[in-house]
Length: 141
Image (cartoon, rainbow, N blue to C red; front, side, top):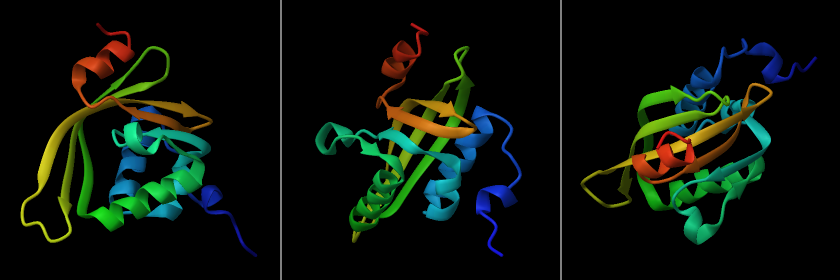
């Protein structure tokens, strides 16, 4: 008998925990766990979406992970401030750390974005690239 993984994982408490678990799964490139934490129709808008367009759904996240593997030896999201918003979204402020294949030094840049949730899953992520822009999008400026 095959039991779907989602039924075997304890429910995650709220937006902060869902986001932290999804970032952890992304950093480990654990597509199975990530698939349990994100909405099947997620709209994922990293900074590179200005060139590539947004990544949509599970397939979009798979494409994002594959692009990272092609481009980077290290790609890691590190958020040190997670601020729940009154409307159920989450403001996330932190860093993206990356190192290209063959490079010797990591690049780390400050970033901030807003995550939204539906049915206890991450349904969208928009990386605004800086704290002021994300705070304005959150209605905090």
